[in-house]
Image 1 (cartoon, rainbow, N blue to C red):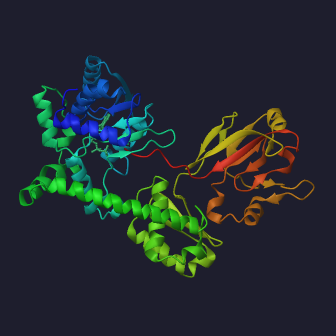
Image 2: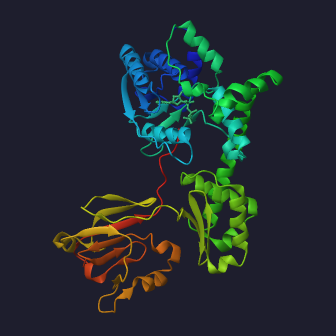
Image 3: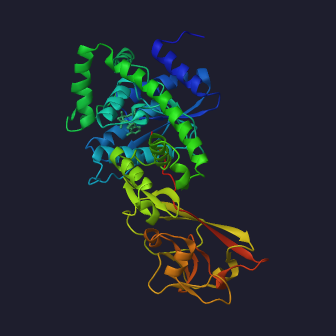
Length: 449
Ligand SMILES: Nc1ncnc2c1ncn2[C@@H]1O[C@H](COP(=O)(O)OP(=O)(O)OP(=O)(O)O)[C@@H](O)[C@H]1O
């Protein structure tokens, strides 16, 4: 077999190391810029050699006046290379509080991660890695943030794995390859726009650092690998500490036995698992202060970005921020899954436990909504019905959570309440067909890429 040039050889090594084998389905994330253009060229060349399947995906953000032309360019490239391309249009909120660039990236990652493949392959390179690390350090990142991007992340559940086979290559090497092979690519004019902080790092700060410290970008990328190793250890420690504290909902008494650093590490890890940004240090210190203080006896809630850290009756847990818009009423037409605030409601057929299937079939109107004024429910047949407030008190549900509980209303009556249970009148008998309802208050969003 012919000897490969350095860049394709490096890509091949990265694919093999990640576990790409014969028949693996690879999908190239193709922006049309020089990095992913070169990546597509190299992957097309390696396709026969490693016997993987290759497709491509382009995200059309609709932000640039050239967006249509970029999509058309990617189409042409893929037709010529014999690669099936999917183009997704996304709507990017122009008034997103995180900024336009971050909103576009989030929308892009969401659709990319839904691609049907085993591995999504990105064109990130060593200069991108150095920028990411520097950018995060300048924003006060800890070890996890400074770890930058991984060369590969294994597929998890339904989500494809992520591969970055150019992560050890410099931008200049990639551009040289493109010139050498006469490749065309598109230039994103926003890359030249200094208003975007990261571009300022790319165009001004990193080149200045390279002058004083030759090889600074590669060194930063190497530092990222060291941070990554340390962050793996922190994650392992957090998993052990979570198990010792009783699982996802933590026992405060156990948590207090940990050092403050381990406690903060555990909460950061839990926040990361829920897909949230790393909480600010000052907010975490506030949680630790209240955990040790008099507030803990009454119960407290501290905002940690998109999450709240809650403490109530000796338990400590993270949940979506109470500042999330409230849930609105909607009809339930028998869907197996219904989103509810930051989580999901799952309905599944059962027997003898849950809601009576016959009662639901006979109903005129089935709705999901938050509690309503004057709502009452009877949990045990033959006993008086209880007010919503009493039901919550008996179930130990803190005040701030009550407005967020989902209620299944059947012909105007509360038939089931999340965290509380099923009304006696609607409960299935022991040998009856039933519908079980499961409420997952937090469902981690699709990870970024
Ligand atoms: N519009 C797009 N459609 C498909 N893939 C894209 C698109 N934009 C970027 N990518 C993929 O992401 C890689 C990195 O792109 P870029 O450096 O512009 O993104 P970033 O926002 O800086 O990085 P990240 O996506 O990791 O936050 C590209 O090489 C390409 O593989």
